[in-house]
Length: 130
Image 1: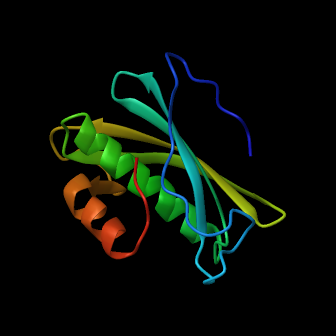
Image 2 (image 1 turned 30 degrees about the horizontal axis):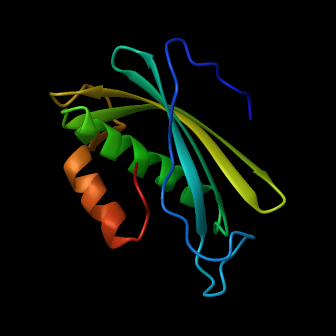
């Protein structure tokens, strides 16, 4: 995974963790290790997430999307558009570095998310948000 340096500022927001912190929890559930949010420029935001016990790259991508959706709501916006996500796995530790734009109105493009709907789905699926 190629590191992306923040252009503006960095804020560390930690998500909930479950289990024993050593990979997959005793219950077999994934362990969500945290979310780092970086405001890159105006409406462009980066999210670095880490987890273990993922079933594959789609799990860590979903974690990043949940972080983006909640952050969008926190900032008073309703929508986000996915720009890119880089995924890396080493020794059972999965990391994603994702970038989204956030906006009040539905942005153009195919990879948009409705933040309220996404946050609700994240809660139903047990995926933490910022």
